[in-house]
Amino acid sequence: FDWHYNASLTKSKDDFDDLLDVLRSDDFSVDDLHGFSAQVGQDTLDAYTQPTGIFSAEDGWSEASVAIPLPKPRCRYNSEELAPHFEVDGVHHRRLTDLIRAAAEDTRFADRYHWIPHMYFWQPTPDAPRSASPSGETIRIFTDVYNSDAAIREFEAIRTRARAPDDAPEVEYVMAPLLFWSDATHLTSFGSASLWPIYMYLGALSKYTRGMPTEFAAHHVAYIPSLPDELQDYYLHVYGTAISSDILTFCKRELMQRIWMLLLDDEFLDAYENGILVTCGDGVTRRIFPRILTYSADYPEKILLTALKPLSKHPCPRCLVSKDDMCLSGTPDDMRNRQVNMRTDTPALARDIKRARKLLFQGASLSSKRVQASLESRSLNPC
Image (cartoon, rainbow, N blue to C red):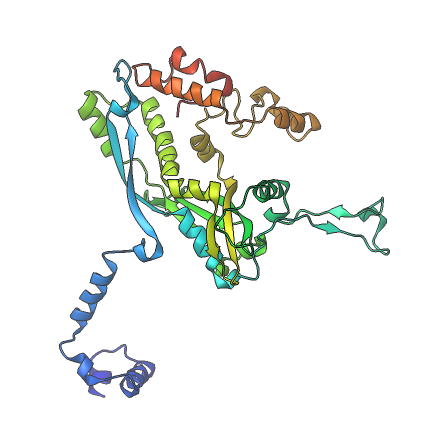
């Protein structure tokens, strides 16, 4: 009672009962307290959390750095690799293949995954309103990613592939539709604290499951760091002049591109081509082929991802519709224009970007006609 009444004025009867419960528990031993104190316990906790922190290696997190090449007008380099590079540290990320494997092995969702995309139809009943289906025919319903034409098309392409010779006949070949999000988030009303996460959902799960925070269906992939202030000091040290706004914007685009090059590593590219063999949570062995079906981000982030010029002649990251035709949005003509003028990744486009970057590191400025000549028609930047 001396501890209860004299040690503190904030002790309650519940606190005293909690202490008694600990002392009476079967696994409590006074011998365990030998050499123990409050400070020792606090130091032990600090020592446990400090080496790993939030991004624990046990959870698959690793820390890496990315190197950003720094061009300067009228400074010529024989190759981009010979130009000065600035290291951006603190890129916390997880391997995509590890996340896919962990999601497939998760027993919580074992009976809720839709590994095989399919079409979903509604057959009106005789007593259904005539307006629901005037012709009385079945109506195709799109409820989720695994009902979409894109998912079905990708899955059919996987099914036509030759099977791996070492796979047993019962191994299922399936697709893992990956849905990515990224969004720079301001954390405080006052100050500059912010986070820029990239996270992923598995599209084989229903949107109703993915949309429930209590299901913890999201997988954190990476956290994009901001360009540090040291970049400007480093540029000044290397070139003897302050970094221009054009080069700083180039570095921001390059940071996003380099981080995605880090995430799309050789292991993921091999899994994309050959699949990964996983014994899933339901006990079935499947060869899973990951496919990136969606990337959701706001317009400024899409500009960084696609290296577009913002609000330029062709402002859309998915098509080459002119800005002058944006007033037609929502019309049948607009839909036809979008389908006919889709942006596509072609060898010719890759050559144009490579040529523009070569000129950039040979001393041409970002706004020069030589750099813009091959990219202006698509409203692209050399990134």
